[in-house]
Image (tube, rainbow, N blue to C red; front, side):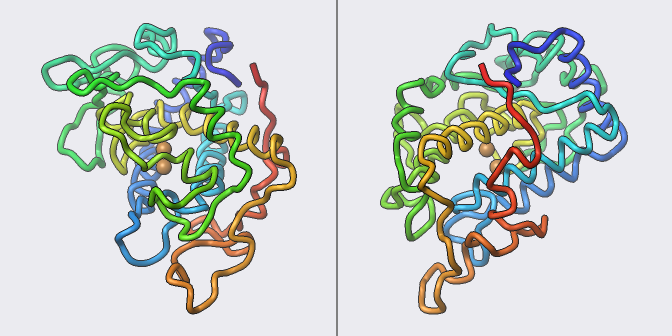
Length: 285
Ligand code: CU1
Ligand code: CU1
């Protein structure tokens, strides 16, 4: 459900479950896994989590596995979502001391407040692309300011009826909802589009392949997942693409996963996770 409607008890139970997972040494595998599947267009081999049609189904499965593990600690916990078209400010209750904690400080980006501040001892960073042992944020990127995506920008992407198109990557020529939403097409003033710009707006650990180091990752991707649901409802006759494996002569052969091929490391196909109602419901608002 929307994080802004959580009760204070629900807020603290979510935080406690996440911190407990970290304490038990069971959190880093999500950071590692995400880093491992953060392949770029230029690299060889399968593109899975990003810059590929599997962006939505892979992250759905990633969130489901994470949520189930939280529920093994506290069965009442679910991953809430952050609607960044509404909660657009560093002073939002989202970033309060009892939930996600605040912005990084000016000198080194270190998050100093809330349950994930380094000095609480709850949240040492053990696996990152940078050397910092503390969680970092740089909201709004003051040196080159960017704003969170607006409702109008989001509607622009949701109105695209085609899920994805060849060459199924992050190039500007790859039209379709998935590429527009994922947002690798970058403008200097605005940053990336939609999903990527939210990572950039939070800044710090959220900008790299090991972005799950910042627990806001889960709330961001829960909202991305809900937006996939809204896109599906808006375009009931549009399905996941590619529907069939790419031919041997296709330059993207062996690099993208089609509807009925398995997504590593989960062993499920996009087709198996297309309908979120098999796994959970959303309380929208
Ligand atoms: Cu990701
Ligand atoms: Cu992301």
